[in-house]
Amino acid sequence: MSASIVLATRNQGKIKEFERLLAEHIQGVRVLGLADFPEMPDVEETGSTFIENSLLKAREVSAFAGLPALADDSGLSVDYLDGAPGIYSARYSGVHGDDQANIKKLLAELDGIPAEKRSAHFTCSVACVFPPGDRLHGEELIEEAYLQGSIVAFPRGSAGFGYDPIFLPAGFELTLGEFGPGEKDAISHRGKAMRAIAPQISVLLA
Ligand code: ITT
Image (cartoon, rainbow, N blue to C red; front, side, top):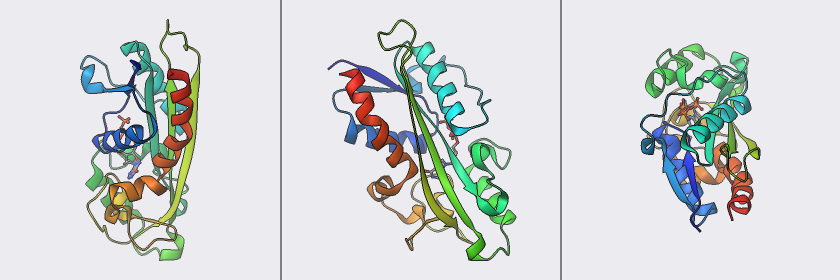
């Protein structure tokens, strides 16, 4: 099979996870990244939901690259903060993608809040879109998945990315920062969303 797909993300943490998950679920497809399209402008995330933003990224990258594109919009929603940082998770501290600063701000917001009021969940929306001119143009695959848990008081572990060191998945005693890569994939919002969308992509690309 000679089909190709572009992974529409600049987040290195996501890229690692997607490469693992794609290899596990989709065989015989060449996986490209945005590094292969250095002229691709940044996509403005103007949507008001994870689904809207994942579709925006997938559509723009697919049209630019002329190839099918897979995009993810994801984030952490904390109940005590009425769902913040939510779709603004990557830039919560004001600097896009500064994981340490984002964690610091979130822990400051929850300072003194007891464990039972620190519930939170991750959301991952993945979208796969086909470019204009492609026989599959107009097909838009979307899946969304969640991971429930809570926010610990201090970061633990250095695995993963983003808020992983302060996120305790429900039913576990380790933060995602203390999980192994395969262990995170087995329960994560991204792992679940990919397990839902990958078979559909495989069928379409076959
Ligand atoms: P792209 O738009 O290029 O994909 P991004 O990092 O800007 O990269 P998002 O807008 O989807 O992507 O923001 C996702 C943020 O949510 C990410 O930067 C982390 O702060 C957080 N996040 C998402 N999934 C996570 C995970 O599995 N573990 C920890 N934090 C996560």
